[in-house]
Image (spheres, rainbow, N blue to C red):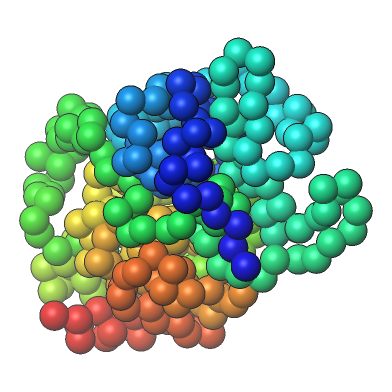
Length: 299
C-alpha cells in the first residue's frame, strides 16, 4: 500500500509552512524531486518553496522557476529523521525525497529489503503524494541562452528540425553505474554519418569533444541548460548514463535506445509510471546500423 496524504490533510500539515524538498542525489533523483515541487505548488501556490541538493543541478531549478536554492541544510541531519516529512521549530516542512530509496529500512534503522520498483516511482511515492503526469516539471524560465542560440546559428541547427541526442560518455551527473549506451567514438561517428545523410542532425554531448570531432557530428559540452532546452525536441535519445533516458522520457516523445535494463531502471516501467508512450528499443549489442534502421521506421 502506497502511503499518501489527501489534500485536506496536506492543507492542515503545510499551512503557513516554508517547504523544503531534500534530494542529495544525481540527475535522476533531482529531477523527480522537482516533480514534488510541482505537486505541492499545484495545490498550495501560496507556499514559499525551497530545494536542497547538489548545486550542480541549479540550472534546472532556475529553469523550473518554482523554488529557491536552500544551501543551509546539512545532509547528515537526515540520519536523525527517518521519516518522509519532518518539521523544524522555524515553520519549515521538509520532504525527504530519498528516504528508503532502493534500500528500505525500518524506522529504527534495522535491516529491511531492496525496493525493486522503478526509480522514479520510488522517489515520488515516498513523498506521500499521488502521481499525476501534470507534475512533470514545467520550465517557466526557458529562454534560449545566448550561448546556445549563437552555437545553433553557427551550426545551422534549428529547433524544429529532426535531431538525435547522443551522450556517449559518463557525464558526472549520475550516481549510478548502469550503462545504457556503450559505443566507441568510431561507432558514434559512423552513426552520425548515417543520420546526416538523411538530414537528421546528430547532437553529441561530451566533456571530451576531441574524441568526436567529425564533419558529420555536432559536438556540444554537457551543459544542463543546453540539454534541457533541446531534449523536448529530440527524435531519439541515446545515453551512457541512465539518468538522461529517464528524464528524456518525461520531457519528450523521443524514442529511447538502450542495452537491456531491468528492475528499478526498467524504461518500460518508467513509461508506465509517467503515463507516457515513448518508443523503448532494447538490444543486447545495440549496434549503430540497428539503431539507425529503427529510427528510419519512426514517422
